[in-house]
Picture (cartoon, chains in turn yellow, brown):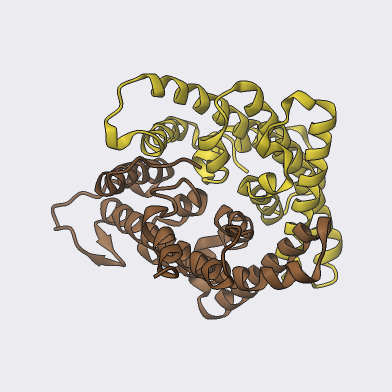
Length: 195
Length: 199
C-alpha cells in the first residue's frame, strides 16, 4: 500500500468529495449543531469516532465474511448493527473521557445512529472496496471534513442571527442557502486528487 | 377528527425538509430529477409506515436496553426488503439512488418517530408516519421538479421550458440542492406564514 494513494484518499474525502457539501450526507448535524463550540465539539468527536470504528469494522466484515460466504444481501442489516454498536461505544468513550463535552444529543446512541454520516461513510467505504487501512484513512479524513464544515457553519450561523435576514428566510432557509454558497466554493476543489 | 390531526401535521405544519429540518440529506441528495425524488419518497414512506406498525410489536417482546438494537435490526430488515424489491423491479432507479436506499434505515424521520407521542394510540402513530411520508414526498416532488426544471429545462424527461431557455447546470449540482431547498423553504414558510422550526 503506497502512501501516495492514501494521501489521495484523504484529500479526496476531506475536501473534494466533502461529506456535507458534495456527498450531501450529514447535513442535519451541520445545520442543527449546537452553536456553543464545546457541545458542537462533543457531538463532532462522537461522530468521527463512531464513523471510524464503524467503517473499519464494516469493511473488514464485508470483505472477510459477507462476500466469501455469499451473504451480501445481509449487508444493510450488518452495517446498521455495526453502526449501532460503534455509536454506543463512542458515546461511552466520549462520555467517560470528556464528561464536560456531553450534551443531550451526544449522550444517546440514537442521536449518533440517526446521524446518517456514520452509516453513510461505512457504506461508501464498502462500496469503494477499500481495505481496512484505506477505510481508516478515509473515515478519519471524511470526519475531519465534516467537522470543518460543522464548525464553519456554526460560526456563520452565529453571524447570521445578528444580521438582518428577511422574515421569511429566517432560520432554516438562510442556513441552507449559506450551505449552498459554501458548497459552491468547495466545487473549486473538484478535479484535485482522485479516489 | 382526532385522527386527521397527526396526518395533517406531517403533511403540512411539520412538513419534513422544508418546514422542519429533518430528512435533509436524502432530500438534497436525490432531488436531481423528479423521477429520483418520487422513487426515494415512495421507498422512505413504505419503510416509515411499516416500521411504525412493527415497532410496538418489537417493544412488547424485547425489554430495556436491547430494545434499541432490536428496533434498528427490524428497520434494517425492512430497508433490505425494499432494497431487494427495488433492485428487482426498478434497477435503474436503485442504481441512481445508490447508497441512499440503505441510508433510509438511519433516516431521522424513521428513527425520530419511533416512540411516537406518549398517550397516542397506535392508529395515531401510524397515521403520523403516513403523514410524514406524504409530507416528505411532497417536499421532494417540489424540490426535485424545481431542480430538474432549472437544471435541464425538463420535468420527468419532458421539456417544459422553451427552447431558448439555457439550463443552469449548477442546479443539478450539490450547491443547487442547498440553494433550491433554502428558497423553497422560505417560500413554504411564507405561505404558512409561521416561523420555521429547526432540527
